[in-house]
Length: 199
Image 1 (cartoon, rainbow, N blue to C red):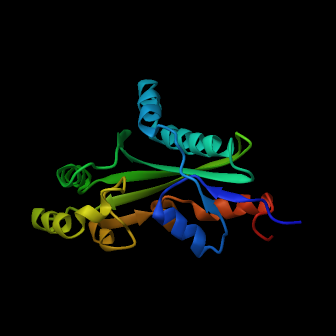
Image 2: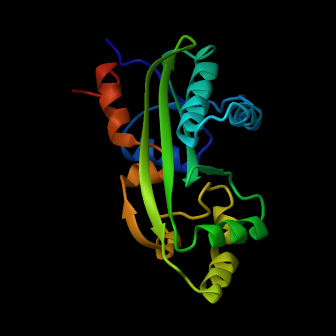
C-alpha cells in the first residue's frame, strides 16, 4: 500500500527546503486564501497572534485539500511583541522601523502547522520560539539593511536566522525549525501517524 499523497499549501521556499531536506516527497499548490482579509477579520475579533497563526495555517490547508487528494500541509507564522502583531515589512524603510522597535527586546515567533484532508483539518499544532535582539548600533542597522534588506522583506521578522540575521540576537530560546516557520519534528510525528513517514 502506497503512502498518502502529500501537498504543501505554501509558496515558501524555506518550507519547501525543510521538507525536501527531511526526505519527504510532495507537491506544491499555493493556497488562494486571502490572508490579509482573514487576518483583518481575526484582528477585529481581537484574536491573539497565536490564534491568528493557527487560523491562517488551518485555512490554507482546508482550502487546498478541497481539490487536492491526500494530506495537505498548511503553515503560517506570526511575530508577537508583547501581544502586538507584526506584519511582513513592505519596504526597506518599514524593515528598518520594525527592527528598531525589536532592538533590545524579546519577541516571539508563533509557527502554526495544520494537516487537512477532504476539506477538514485532521491535525494541528502551534509552536513558539522566543528571541531577544541585542541592542545593536544604528550603524549596524544601516549596514544590515543595505546588505540584506531586500533578501528578508518576505520574512515576518525581517531576518533569516540561517544567514546574517543571527547577528541581530543575544539569546534564542526555541526550536530552529519553528523559527524558520515549520515545526518539523511535530509534523514528522503526525505524518508517521498518517502513514506518510515510516515508523
